[in-house]
Image (cartoon, rainbow, N blue to C red; front, side, top):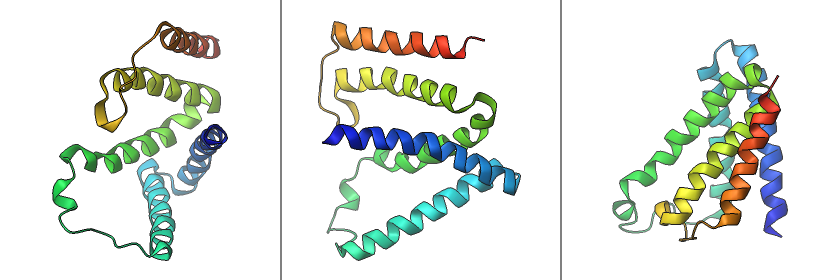
Length: 144
């Protein structure tokens, strides 16, 4: 059941770069387009969080958060801004597969070492082979 949701995220990510690129054209500025995208997302998430009714912070919860856990927003801002910049230059397929390649390569290290709260999952021959196939696929779709 979780795999279809992951695929839906892929559809959403591929569409998001195109939608945000159109916003960039209207605003003539990729950073402003990224800001508007984040602002709309923040409003939607804020409304959902308010509807849920859960308390925002438990006692001492902020003090126990590792420093690096605050970087998610920085990564998100970088990812959105760069996708807005790159989408019209690379096209949907090359942008998507190059992003996925980066994710897969980073994920191998994250899983192998259990970094950032991921479970430790050993690198296997099949995982390496799958990553290689993905990189080869990226090279094939970028070759002109």
